[in-house]
Image (cartoon, rainbow, N blue to C red; front, side):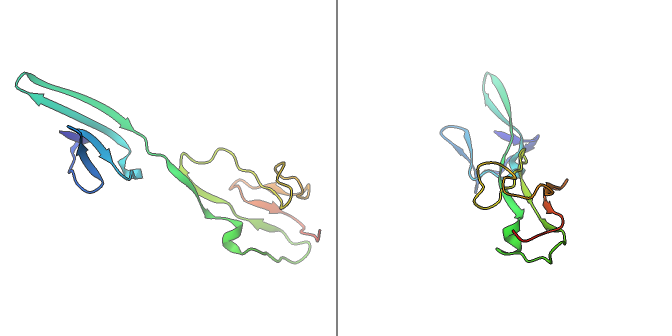
Length: 130
């Protein structure tokens, strides 16, 4: 018998018992994260084993410069901001911005005044022609 976070598990759909009691969850979802426990019982007694399942979600951009447009126009000397919002578990540890044709180093080819804001957006104050 299987339980999830102390509650009985309804088998079927994504969650199945296979090969004599092994549990298969396919596909996993964020809500599957938690403690799964198996209990085996016979005439001599019972035994339990629990395991914690941590579900990691693939990183996905929810907002990015390409979600705005492939080309952004801004009046000269105005500030331009390129958003960067990502979801997933665990969240990204490293954010890097690159300018087209300068993929060898982060910020290479960007003006020195460009910076990454607290929300990881790229900000270029006083936009100028290149």
